[in-house]
Image 1: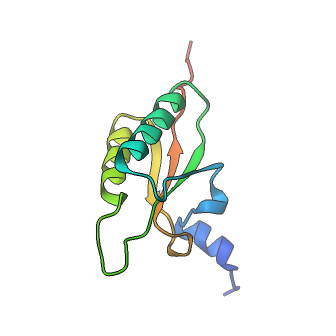
Image 2 (image 1 turned 135 degrees about the vertical axis):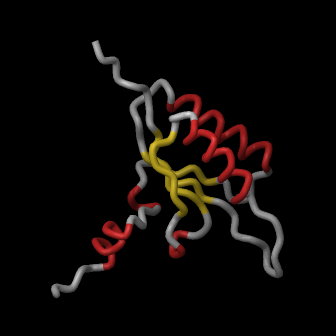
Amino acid sequence: MPHLEDFYANKLRGALGLTDAESVLDLRGAAWAKAEASLNDMLERSRFAKGKTVAVRLEPPPEGGGETLFQPVGRLLLDAKRRGWVDRLQTLPAEDGLGFYIALAGKPEKTA
């Protein structure tokens, strides 16, 4: 069996990350209110534009444990997926840190 480079093996596994995204929304160090506003703004604007992919970066948990934005951001993105605004939602690969890779649906094409 031929050897696959990690880049191609990750593509087959579905491990899309920072280098695969068209843009990055860096929420590291942001408070929940700012993060929520940024995400809602991105999602709202995406409804009227062409679909694109975005990597959302989050702060890792503090040493010794603690809360992060991972769960509340995940809930918000899952809700957007249910509404049809997000086509694909997955976590970033471990080497890219904590966050999500999302494919925004964009504006639906008119069928006439």
